Image (cartoon, rainbow over all chains, first blue to last red; front, side, top):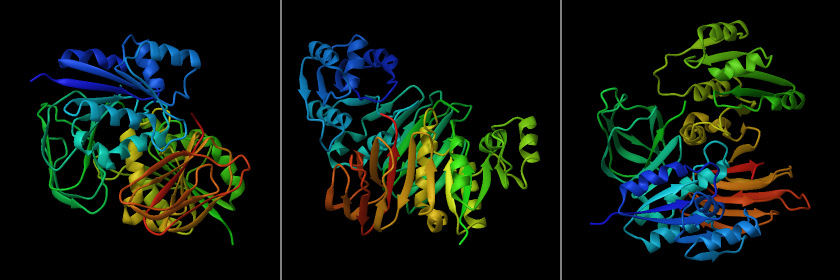
Length: 224
Length: 224
């Protein structure tokens, strides 16, 4: 079966555009959706967008025209709306390519982004409209990668990083961590929990995470 | 009644040490608690600490001695522990000065901190041990200020900022926002909600926030 990935670039600073070539290698088909200034960043990096959308209040009129000239589809929204441009873009991506993987760049705001925007982008995991694609979504930047896990058993293959943090967004039942530097026997947590600064073992074995109910994030962290 | 403030400095990058003099002006008594590298930052800024604590794995042996020489009390913890140094420091502050206000610097990690640490510092609001002092806690940096609101009515006096974001950590019942650029009639949210990029009006009137149940954060944001 052909594999597809939608790269969604939001307006946060320093999106990890240098990851795009790896994604192009890894998938049969890659689509590009740019939100506002994120669209400009993708265009400036040389990519043609499948869709550009947003209120475009963070770009000049000239930049807006550059985006439109390099986008197969261009959707302009009013500035005063309930959604962020990033959420609109991810929503479109999940609706148009419902079977794909999704990689969101410029959503974490690492190295200088707004912290309230970061939380809004984590909180998308609480929204019903993003549930169907949530397990196929990666928030990716240079020093942090975030994925959302649903209940069940998950094997996290070794990859080079300094820290592996397990942070739940909800109460969690029966959370176990195996194969990591710090293991966790089956534990229930009555409120959202942050188990940060775990690590893969030097032996590079995979880390296994399981839980029965709740929603868990994994952070791969590459900075001290 | 005499007013007291405990300044807790954690290990995140770029703590807003320049806010300390304002706090010293505003309170009758100011205490200093430094966690790990945060202790070093306070000492280097010229302050004598009431308590320094942490595993001190982020400072050199020489720096450790400098901290100890400028601290009335010094508590060293093992490196492999469940708590972060920042949480230990805040826990100590709330236990030792149970009536005080608490200002935590170096907890938000803005401009380059670890995002999993930031979430762990937001998630402290879920921990029972921090409940008694939560409404008197401010997480403060140069471009973001965060406070936690418990159910009831709250008046947020005008202060210069670009954005005022209302982000709940839980489901919320009967949330209203009045006096802001975007008002909200009484609304129930079944899951954590991010209402970001609101603003004070140009008329500088206070913003009034009320809700019946749940836990809400306010972000004052001073960057685009």
